[in-house]
Length: 291
Image (cartoon, helix red, strand yellow):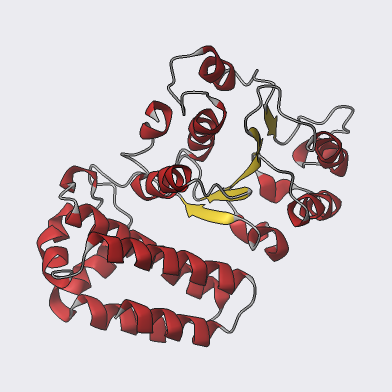
């Protein structure tokens, strides 16, 4: 647990997703950590691997955790661009099918330590088409007690068939210390004059195409993350603490557990969009649940 706590300040929502899944015993077979470069996705993947493999749930103070940190644990596999042997210069810029086929051959073996096996695929969007198809076969028939963590800074480049089979976790770059994205700050500032529900509905009506729909979903995740922090009075971890009073007023009478349900619903909607569900129908259904 100590290891995973390292990401709780900068990526509080991701921490809650992973910590909650572990505590409930509902670990997904595959996770997709996506977000901008520099947002700590690989670091979080290693901390989550410690929680899964370490006999003390990621104590960060044992031999297992140290071996994971150094990428030398036998139950941890890291795949990234350039790790495949005997590559040409051109192939070094991608993750080839041979690397995934080798993973496919070894992934069904039992773990060395009789616990979870973890495979992290960094820059997974750089898998070749053949590699992605080979990896999809693994996801279609996943091995027991094995967790795949895909890391991407360009999730749009991934095949939808792969994305739809993963539990997604959106990472945001730290936006504290007066380094807030202008677009997000602008949207939050409008809330104060027009009201939260009104602005969110206006944003939904302006959505054109799947990419804009997913951008709206990502904004909703940030919005409800802020609401959850307000409910717990964890103001120091808010990205927009200046709006805590407005959020307190808007979510008055709504329990923390309900907000967590909203966040789960938003993630479900995101997965449906990646499966090419009708954009208008799924967004309408989501907003009916939220308001």
